[in-house]
Length: 206
Image (tube, rainbow, N blue to C red):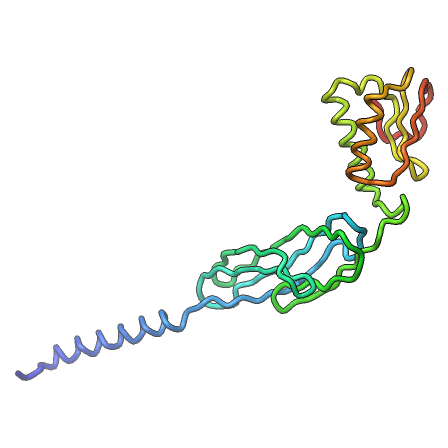
C-alpha cells in the first residue's frame, strides 16, 4: 500500500516528538554540589556541642534527593536526606559532641575542615554558656519543687557557682544543685552560703 504525503508528515512529527521526549527524559538529572562547610565553634572542649553546617545545591536540571553524609575521621557519623529542585540550595546542619580530646577531620561531600577538642582540666575550660545552662536548669528544678523561694543567689562567680540562702542552708536544695553540676559541668566548685543579706553581681535572683 502506498504511503501518502500526509501520512509521512504525521509519522515525521511522531518521530520528532518521541526523540525530544527521550532527550529530556534521558538527559535530565539532578546533580549536587556541597559548599561552605563550617564547624561552629571550630575549637571546643570535651563534652560540649558544636554545629556542623554545609550548603548543598542542586546544579542539575531535575529535582532530586541528596544524602548528606557527615564523616568524622573517616567514619560515617550521621546522614540526612535533603530534597532539592533544579537550582535550589539548602543548609544542612548536624550537632556533634566529642568525648575525647584531639583534632578531628570533618567531611561532608568533597568539603573538609577541622574540629579541635581540648580537655577540661580546670573550671575555666567550661564556656560561660555551659555554666549559665547549669544555673538555668537548677533554677527551673527548684521552681518545679517549690524550693526556689529559699534561694537568694544562684550565680557563677570567681570560677565557682554560688548558692546563697535567705536563712539556714537547705540540704535538699544543695543536693539538687550539686547533681546538676555533676551532670553538666563536673568539677566546678559549689560555694554555699547561709543568711545572705546583700546580693552582689548575682546572675540570678528569686
